[in-house]
Each structure stands twice: as structure tokens, then as C-alpha cells.
Image: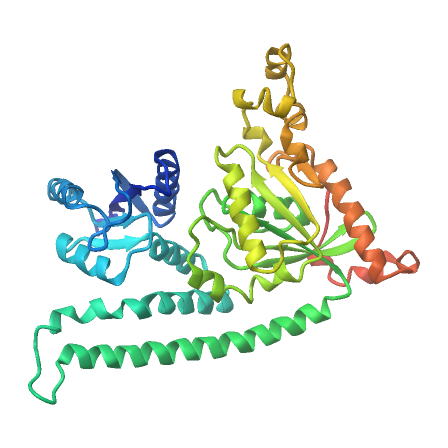
Length: 418
């Protein structure tokens, strides 16, 4: 038998430069959208950008740009068109009519598809399914437009309307069923978390693909999945770690992203309880990424939305092994004098970063490479002091308790930093 290999899907990306979004930001978002597409197994063949004051209410882009995209897809093999913003039901309907057999996706649907691919546990699968149905419900109208032309007589309704009504009931019932199942799982999770209340809890948070899972693996010495793709981790992972002579629980959580679908945040709130109930947050940042400042802001906004914005936090600037000094930082807030730039270029990334404004970005800041373990001891010492203080508040006489009593599950215990 001759083996056949399925060709990857191809897509074009579409974005707008508007009054609220500059050309530079649009380009950054398009690069991230292309990465999302790649994570989904889709190859990007071209990007289209248009300047508009605001998205066209009918087709998102203007008439001229729509015709330009149509011309391109007639001349090139394209399976999907992906828009960088959420589309309204009317826009989806009009775009599908314009592009006929070509699939139309928006950013939220693409992210939902990735979450669906990545979900492993029963809880995560239910959460993703709930988010998908919540996304689908307001868009059901477009699914039966092919029947809407069959008008009924007096006192009668067209078959499209009947099908739509039936579908709405089915989706509503499914949403209610999923919420009920998730509530049961959530109650079980609350019980488990209460049983763990005697240990300090530390949660890894951050933008997607900043190295949280790699750091988790380094800290807990556990086989935790890590990959250079967006949303490599969807399910939260909890491990017991011993730091010095103090045990604590370390949780890796799903990464955040710009324009994260609200349905996902709502559906994953039970999973994100690990963040809300954590004693300490390790906010991991990819310092080598050109937009890391915006990533910090996105994560902080979501943490505030979750009610976790005021927790004790360590700002962990990761991937210093990939960092390159930037000219615009040389004189930032008088950090450097005129004679330093040449000398700074000869320093290591760690030495350079320690002299920048980033050290004042938060009360607790550390620069590391989780991959190469560079400066991990600094993180270890900083975290040890914070965990020790929290642990002492729970157990004033903890020094009298043998360490063996804490390590109930040796297989789940990592000795971080050694």
C-alpha cells in the first residue's frame, strides 16, 4: 500500500490598522496570529492589512480589500481565511457568502480550536466544550440561512426558523449540562484544595509560551509537557516541591494571551481557582520577546479580573539566554551614563539586565533561564524567603516537625535548585 501524507491546511490572515491600533501593533498581532495558526497545523501563505477607522460592519474589511483577497484565493490554494479580531454573526455570514467554500475563522475560534486540541483531562475537555458552545450560540442564525428563503404561509414558519429554534434548545441544554458537570468537578477540586491547605501554594502565571512549563520541570524535577507552541499547557499541573527544608505546592496554569476569548476565561475559572487561592505568584515573562512589556500588562489585567492582582508576586524574567541588549535601554531613566554602552555590550545578558529599569518593575524581580538554569539559585533564595514566611504563619512551630512528615508522596516531591 502506498502511504499518502495529508497536506497541511493553508490560510491567509486579515487584520486592520485602526484609530485604536497602530500599524506596528497590527504587525505584532499578525505575527502572533500566524503562530496560533502554526500551532493549529495551518501554514500561513499571505497576510492582508487594511487601514480603516473601524471594522466594516458587513465584511470587516472594505470592498476593495475584499476583492483583493478574493482574487488571491482564486489564484492560490487557500483553505482558510483567519481574521485577527472577533467577527459578528452578520460578518461571518457575509464573508462565507463571499468566499464560498473557503473556511472563515476569527481569532477566538482559532484559540478555541487550539484549546480543544490541547485539553487532556476530563475537566479541561468539558471547559473547552462549554466555551465552544457559548461561542457558537449567538452565531447559530447563520447556520440555517440556506433555508430562510423558504417562507411559510400565514400562521406558518419556514423550516429554517424551526431548525434554528431546535438547535438553540439543543445548545442551551448542552450548555446547562456541561455547567452542571463542571460544578460537580469544581466541588471535588475545592475538597482537594482544602485538604492541601496545610501547605503553602505557589502558582506559575504568565503569557503563553514564556517558559512556565520548563520552569515547572526545573523546579519540581517532574516530567511536565513543554513545547515551543502557544498553549502547550491547558490543564493545570500541581506538584509538591521541597525548598531547603520547607515543602510547598507548585502549580502550572494555562498561559494568557491578548484578546483571550471571554468564554474561555469564564469556562476555565474553576481551573484558575488555583491562581486565586495561591499564596504566592511567580509571574514568568519572556524577556527576549520584543513585546514583553505588553505581555506583562495583559497578564496583570487578567489577574485583576480574577481577583488575584494584589497577591505577593515574583516577576521572573525568563529566557535571558536568548536576550540581546537593546540600544533604547542604554539611557532609560538615567540608568547608564554616556561612557557605558560599549562596555555593556561586552557584559553578559544577566549583568546587563541587572542594571536596567526592569529591576524596579516590581518589589521582587529575578532574571533567569529555565532552560539553561542560569541564575536559578537567585530565584530559589528569593522564593525560599517568601515561602518560609508564609509557612511560618501557618505553622509557628514548623521547625519541630521532621521533614519526612511533610513528604508524604515521594514521587511527587522535587528538591528545587539542588
